[in-house]
Amino acid sequence: MGYVLAAIAGLVAVGLYLTLCFYVFLYVALPVSAITGVIGVVGGVATAVVLAGLGWGGKSKQIVLVGPAAVMKGAIGGRPVPPGRPRRDPAWPTYFVTQYRRDLAGIIAWLRESVQDSWQVCGRGARKVSRTSMYLWLLVWPAVPVVLAFLSMLSLGAVLGALFCALIVAVVTGLAWAVGGAVVWILRGADHAWQVAFRAAASCPRCYYVTRLPAYRCSCDDLHRDIRPGKLGVLWRRCGGRSETCGRRLPTMVLRAARVMTPVCQRCDADLHANAAVATDIRIPVFGATMAGKTRLIAAGLVLLKDAFGGQASFVDKESERTYRSHKTDFDGDRPMPKTAKTNPVATTIDVHTGRRHALVHIFDAAGELYVERKANAELSYLDQARTLMFVLDPFSVPDVRARLTGPHTATLAEANASPHDTEASYNSTVQRLRDAGVETGRRRLAFVISKADLLQKLPEDLGLRITDPEAWLHDRGLDNLLLSARRDFSDVHIFIVSSMARTTNGVATALDPLRWLLAGEGITV
Image (cartoon, rainbow, N blue to C red; front, side, top):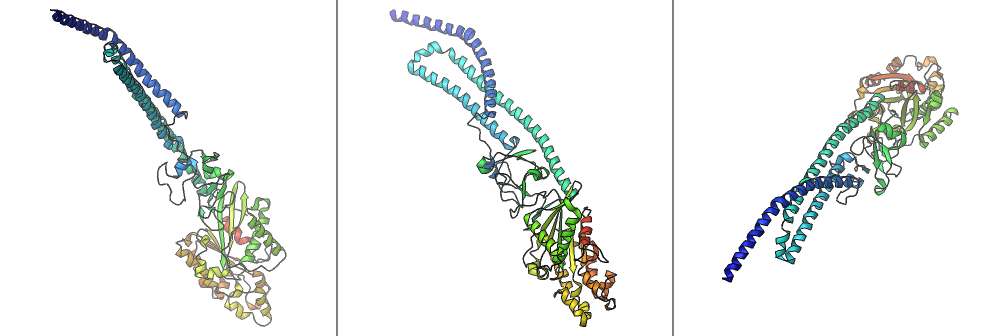
C-alpha cells in the first residue's frame, strides 16, 4: 500500500511540476525570450556597426593591409609586371581599388568570431551545469529558451548588420568608382590633349627612346613608371619606396609631376631634361657625308639660335652647356672644328620659349661615317622619331666642282677640306634606314643645306660655280636626281645655301636660317 501511495504522490508531483513548467514557459520564458530576442537583434546589429567602425579605424587584426609590396606582386589586379614596365610602381593603392574588400572581409570575420564566442560561452555554461548535476536542469531549464532566443537573434542581427555594412560599402564604392573613374579619364585626357596639341614628348638624349610617359623619380630615389591617375591615386598618390617607409605625396598626371619630380628614361633610367613630355619636343638630326660641314653648321646654328632668343633660351644640361661654349669659342674665333667622334652622338639640347610655350630642341651631330655605313647607321634610332631633318651637302665633294678647281684654285679646294664620300650615298643610306624602320618619310620635313657657300662666293664668276639658283646649280652638277629623290621622299623640302662662318646674311643664308625654317614648322618663331 505504501508503494502505491508513493507512486501516486510521485505522479502528483510530476503533474504539478509539469503544470508549473507550462505556466513558467508560457508566462515567463516566452515573454522574456521575446524581449531578449529583440535585444539580441539590436545587439547583433550594434556589434556589427561597432566592429565595422573599429575595423575601419585600423583596430582589427583580421584585416590584411594592401601595401606597396602587395601592389608590386599584383594585388590590385592584372599581371604583376605590366607590359613595357619592369614592375608595378611602389605606391599605396587607393582605398576603393582593393582595400575595401579586405576591410569588409576582416570585419565580417571579426563579427563571426564574436558571435561564435557568445555561443561557445553558453555551451561551456551548459556543460558546467551538466557536470554539476543533471537534476540542476530541472531548475534552470527556463533560461534555455531565453538564451537560445538571444543567441539566435544576436546571430540574425549580426547578419543584418553585416549586410548593412556591405550595402554601405557597395554604395560608397560604386560612387567612388563612378566619380573617380570619370576624373581619371578627364585627367588622362587632359594630359593627352596637351601633348597632342603641343607635340610634347620625352626623348632620351642618350638611348634615343621617345615616349609621352616618362618615369619619375621620388626623393627616396625610387622610380614611378606610370604616374598617370589610376588605381594608385586619382589626384595624388603616396609613395611606398624605402620598404614602404617613404610616404611622400606625389601628384598624378605628367603635367603636374613634371613641375616637382625628375623625369627619367623608361628604357635606360637616365635622367631626362626638365619639362620632358610637357614641352614641345623637337628632334633635328643633321646628316650628310663626313667633312660636309655638319659640325660647323651646328656650332654656328646653336650660337646664332641662342643669340636670337637671348634670355628666352638656355641649355638644359651641363654637357649641352659645355658643347655650346666650345662651339661659341670656335665660331667667334673662326677656328677649325674638330672632327666628330665616330660614336653614337648625345643630343645637344636647348630649351627655348616664346610666351608660355616651351620647346626642347635636340640637335644630333653624328660622324659622317655612321651615315654611310649601314651597320652603324642602324644604331641611330633617333632618326626614326624626328619630324624634321637636315641634310648637308658639301659642294666641294661634287666631282664637277672638283674638276673645275685646278691650277690657282686648288688652294680653295684644299681650304674647303672636301668630303671624300659620295654625297648621294650618304643621303640614300639614311633614307633607306628610315624606310627599313617603317618611318613614313612622306610626313617629315627636310632642310636641304648646301654648305661652305662662303668659299663658293670667293670663286671667280667665270668658273660657273657660284650659286644663284640652287635647283639649276644642282641640275648642272648632275645632282638633279638627288633633289628629285628628296622631294619625293619628304613632304616639304627647302634648299638653303649656307655660310657657317657668317653671323648675318650677305648673299647667302646663315646657319640660323635652316633652323628657323624647321622650328617655324613646329610652331616656334625665331
